[in-house]
Every structure is written in structure tokens, then in C-alpha cells.
Length: 322
Image (tube, rainbow, N blue to C red; front, side, top):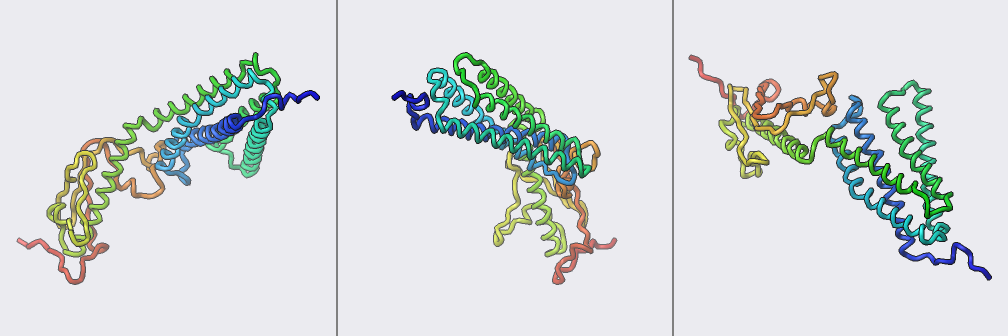
């Protein structure tokens, strides 16, 4: 009895896990690429009703991290599989390969159909925007390309003379690398991101100090003379220091109700939502309350005694009349 072509070379655990790893890294790479491109659209075409700059930057960084690790693994395992198939064409009939390829085709087809349904719905609802259209286009191109390639792959019979896998790998690598590099032009280098995080820490520290100054005022009816007056070993509060230099933040009482807080910033704040052409930082007013340029910046705050009333047990300090 003749042995069937599909069983002439038995399947091994190596074949199973190699195909499984290839598909898993494929899905991870595709999802990360789509997410990365989505975040670029959100960054360049912000929606003031649904925007979080911190969320966008985190999305870009996480998607880039996944692509940097998963995509090379996918290319390497795909190369190993194609090399093996060129030497053992009967392995193309392995069940694990067929099942995973058809599963990929199914997921890609469902994704494309779902996006087309969403596109028609938005069109009928009169809500087609450039932002939405670009996201639909991204999914259609990425999912459609994946569907087209694996439809060809599941049908092909010649595994020795085809150059399409190599061309597809080179083209996809160019797209992924270009998408990652684009992030450096949009959000800056890792060093830029670290400086921005340090400045975010500085604004948070100034906000904490401001709250403590107000708390000091409501309890003592006067502004502290220095930041050391705010230190309280009982509740464990100590005025924070600059996270990079370890220097004390600058504070001064200007008048009975007014004080200044200063810090040295390494970057300027992103454009604010008050500028029609700018990218909004967030939907709340906190970030706008601490907008700063690069360098030494001071924030002047005035306590309204009608809002922040001193404790009834403390009489406010009133300047002596001359």
C-alpha cells in the first residue's frame, strides 16, 4: 500500500510549535502595527471629546515595544518554515499548518467585513470624518494584505521557486520600520520622553507643595516663610526635591495671600487645547494650570480667603496699619 504524501514525513513537536509561534507573533505584530498607526492618527487628528495625550503616548510606546520584539521573531520563524517547506514539500499538508492558515484567513476576513459594516453605518449616520476614514483604511490595508498573502500561501504548490515570501517579508519589514521611525519624529526620542517625564514629576511636586501651602494657611492663617515650614514629622510630609538635581524647589511669599513656586524645566509644555491648531493635553484643566516653558518658570498663586477660610481657632494675620 502506498504511503500518502502528507504522512511520508511525520509531524514533530518542533513543527507544531514553530507554526504556532509564527501565527502568534503574526497576530501580535498585526495588532501592534494597527494600534500604532491608530495612535498616530489620534495624535495628528485629535478629537477634543475623546483625547488623552498620556494614553496616546503610552499606546505608541507599548505598540512599538511589541513590534520591536515580535516582528523579528515572526520573520525568523517564517523564514525557517519556508526553508523547511522548500526541502520537504509534503509538510505543506500538515494539519497544524492548514488549520492555522485557515484560522488566519477567517480572522482577517471577519476583520475586513466588520470594518466595512462600521464604515457603512457611519456613512448612513452622517458621521464620516477623516480621522475615522483613516482608521478604516489602515485596518483594510493591513488585514487585506494579510488575507491576500495567506490565501495565496494556502493554495500554493511550488515551495522552491517562489520569491513572493521573501518579497513580502522585505515589504512588511519596510512598513514596520517606517512606522516605528515615524514615532521618533512625532513624540521624540527616549531621551526626550525621559525629560518630559521628569517635568511631569516637577509639576506634580509643585501641585503637592501648593496644596500643602494652602493647608498651612487654613490652619495658621499665614503663609509659610519657607518650604521647611511645611515639613511635618507627625504626618510624614517632607517637601519634595527636584527629581534630577535633588535641589529644593523655589518658594517665596509675595504678600499676605500671594506666593510663588518655581522650578527648572527641561522641556516646554505641549500645546494647549485653547489653541485651535494645537493638540489638547487633556480634557481637564489641571495641565493648563501648570503650563510652562523650558527653563526656570515661576507660578504665582493667590489664596482667596473667602474660599479657603482659616480655621475658626486661628485669626488671620493682618498687616499692621501705618
